[in-house]
Length: 412
Ligand code: ASP
Ligand code: MG
Image (cartoon, rainbow, N blue to C red):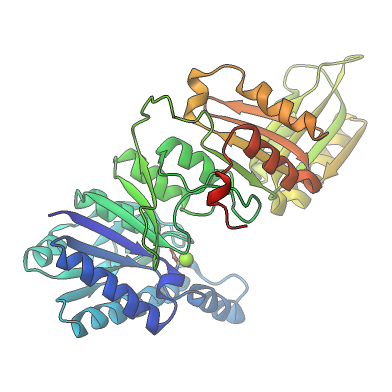
C-alpha cells in the first residue's frame, strides 16, 4: 500500500467531464489499495481570466488582492473533484491552502513554501478519505492568502509529497512524459523512461515546459520521486530520480532543449582594462535584467568587444542601458540581435565522456550552421545560432546523438 500524491493540471480539470474522468482515475488507484492525496490546478484558462479581470481595474493590481482573487480558481476545482469522488462512493474532502496550512512567506504572487502541516491530511488518510488540496496557494503567518507563481501547483504537489513522505509524486498533464526534445520539432523524439533531477532542471530552465522549475528543484532537494504522466492515456510516463545508473545503454545525452526567448547585445570597442565587465554588467543587473551567456573577445589595439544574451522581454531595456554606458565609456558601437535561438544538449553522461562538445559542433558544421556563442557546464553545452536554423539544428543534433526513435516507433 503506497501513499501517492497526484497532481492534475489545468487541462486535466478543464471541464466537468474531465473532472469526472479524473475522479474515475483516482477511484481506480483507491481500489488498488493506495492512499491518495490529489492536488489540482484551476480549470484551464481560469487563472488568466481572473488576471485579465483584475487588469481591467488596474494595470498593476495590488498583489495581495490579486492573490485573494486568483486563488479562487483552485478552490472551485477542489470542490468539484471532491463532489465527483463522493458521488462515486469514494470518501473525499477538499482543503484550500489555508485549511491544510501551507505556510508561505509574504511575497504575494511569488510566495515560497516555508512549512506544511501534514497532520490534518494524515488524519483524513487514516480515516480512509481521499484528500483534495488546492494547488498554487498558501497562507502567510498573518493569514493572508498567497500564491506561488504561475504553474505553482506542481510545487504544491511536490511539497506535499515531501511533507507526507509520499512514495511518489505523480504529475498528470497533457503529454505522456518527458521527451528527448519537443516532438513538434522532431517527429522522432522519444519519451524518456527516466531522467535525473539535474537533467530535468536543465531541460526545464532551457525551455522544456513540462514541469515548473521550482517543483523540480524542490523534488531534488527532498528526494521526492517524481513521475510525469498523461492524464487520460495509460503508460509509465517518465520517472525523475536521483540516481544516475551507469549502464552501457545509458545515453550520453538525454535531451536537446532550445528556446527562442533570448536576444543578444554587443558593445564594441570598449577599453581592455580592469573593471570593464563590471562597468557593463553592473548597470544591466541594476536595471533588473538577468544575463544568460557572456562572451568577451580577445583584445585588439587595447579594446575589446563584449557580448551577452538577455531574455527577449528585457531586450529594449538592456539596449537603452547599454547605449548610455557606451557613451560614457567611449565605446565604438552597440549592436543588438533578436533573431537568435539557443540550443542545448543535456546529459549527465557528459561527465564520463570526452568529445561531446566537438561532436555537437561537428553536427552543426555539417549543416552549415554558424555558432555565435558557446557556453558549457558539467552536464550541458549550449550554443546561440541564428533563429531560422533552430529546427534544423535540433533535428541534426537529435540524430547525431542517436536519440531518434526506431522507424517503427514514429507516427509517420
Ligand atoms: N492555476 C495556476 C496557473 O495557471 C497554477 C497552476 O496551474 O499550476 O498558473
Ligand atoms: Mg496551469
